Amino acid sequence: MLEIRPNCELCDKDLLPEATDACICTYECTFCRRCVDEVLNNVCPNCGGGFVSRPIRPKTAYRKNVSLANQKASTKRIHSPYSHNQIQQFSDSLKHISPEKR
Image 1: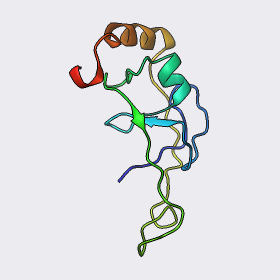
Image 2: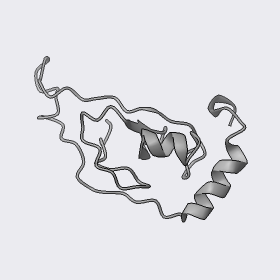
Image 3: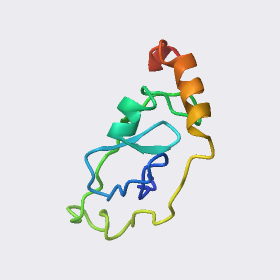
Image 4: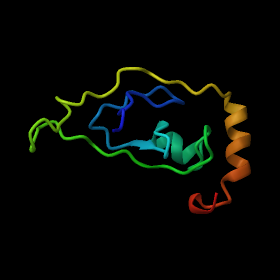
């Protein structure tokens, strides 16, 4: 089950559970759409994969015990361990390869 992380790992923007600009990679690294498009070039700085929009967990339990109220979003903030220079170099080395071919 997705953690629904609370922030962009790069710029630290708050990404509430209902945020439509939250993006995740296959390992659930979480970044805002602006960072994904303008800084990361759709390259996860942690694994090299691409990003997709993070799903929104329903606030209301339309099925018994299946909602944000029952499966809470994470409150643990995560920050990238890489410098902006390291991220840029990594992104530049992979951005020309489409995510499905990386």
